[in-house]
Image (cartoon, rainbow, N blue to C red):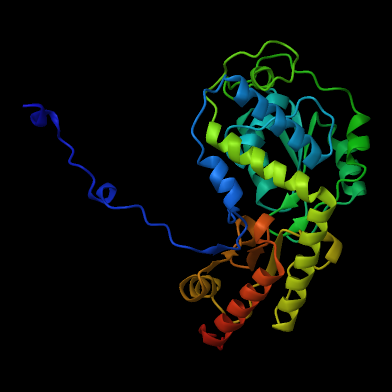
Length: 340
């Protein structure tokens, strides 16, 4: 009799085993995960207010402070994607009618400007072509002209492969008045007051805010532990060296790097112009189908113009550089090249 209440049949796909192919993810993200982090994420759950979980959260805070070299006590991880964290930052800083200055040289500046407008801010934009970065003079001129309460600038513009220098920007911003909002943030979930308390940043007894992604906390804790064991400077050098090897290999293939200045290239994501006469989609599909390697095309203002190759975390190795260069060499031989 109970079966008469069922109007939706069992999904047949869910009655088959989960199949996940093995691929080398050398795009702008996600990237492959080390076994140690996978194992941490597979541990049994604990309650989100258990003392052991709160200890893990404290260790995550310390790891983030080490990674970003900050002593700011308001250090925490957002239970969400990178977009969620970007929105949390802007939502907690901006109120309706505030002026926000957004530096736009890729998709993340575009997205930040969109978010700020949705929050009711008056958005002023500084603009640079994709592949270029902002100088301190550019920023100072924008601050003097628009007198914003918030400056948004992207340190690692993954859509174009640009590494934005940040030296001196803090001093420029600190010349302005301290921002102190007058109203509550529009989102409870992203309210930094609640989040700061939940993460133990305000010195008050912790209160329940949301049911945290415990397994993700375990994985993040182990990732930060691996970074601490390796050391920041060693990690920076490894990424720099492998990026340099990749850039030289791309030049040897006759390809043109999108970001002209070496100092302005992200060590984690390298952009190369789509070679003349080739379809970028055909190149990425060939690598996936024949070499089980993912690289990506452009995004936002770089769409159709570049290929993006990521060397992040455990994927940043000399052997992976050799592997992707071999795959690209093969793709350039076999993919159709238009004579137009």
